[in-house]
Image 1: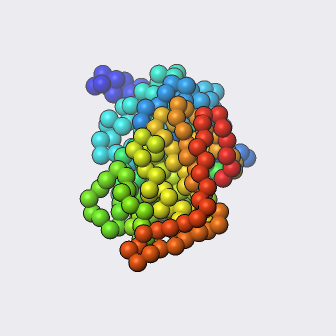
Image 2: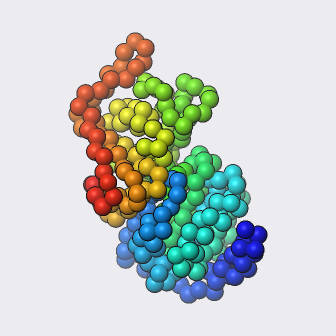
Image 3: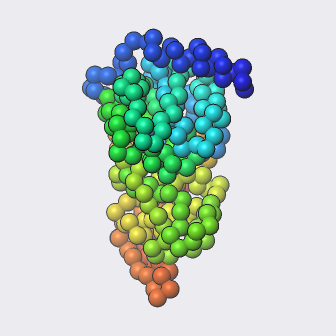
Length: 284
């Protein structure tokens, strides 16, 4: 790994600053989202991400590892997945909370063909990025036609209302909720690229149904999108396509049904569930 990292920082990053202006800087096109549910990233899925972002034709990738407690490792594997598929121009920016980023890096974010947000803790990422020039630059990249991609925590941050992973009634972290009850799920503020849904990840593998059901009962105007591992949704406009090896589950509460009993257990009627396979699409 050490030899690879030396090559990565010595050769690939300088190419970013030697490259010419991004083809997306005109703002004529709107970007795409590539939201991965975590776990492994199959080669075919990474290749599709590269093709949809236009990296195979030019431009560069910026990796943002701030969600991770081990950014070196996250950058290594994030870069490797792209390099294995022939990508060349790759950099990673490790912004820190409270430190003003350089104008050069902000400009590079705005003009990237692909910004990739690694896994880790979505709360850590948003504490650094939320309400800053970094967030604004990511948004400009998207509006100018760039792709914003992320896996695991990098998926959770895509929606406006963001699952933090925390339960308000319990302090011990668990990968899945044991109950469906009122006033328990904590939602933070994400990047807001999707305003009509809440995103959850590692969904089928970690049986995270309870917390997404809770979300759509308490926030009936939003759909809940649960993306499994080794699976992604490609969002273009208001349409999402399922890509990868597993499923995407979409929960909705079309009748805005909501009841709660004396023990704060939640109830609802006629919730809608779709289990979507790779190649299927749904509207946002």
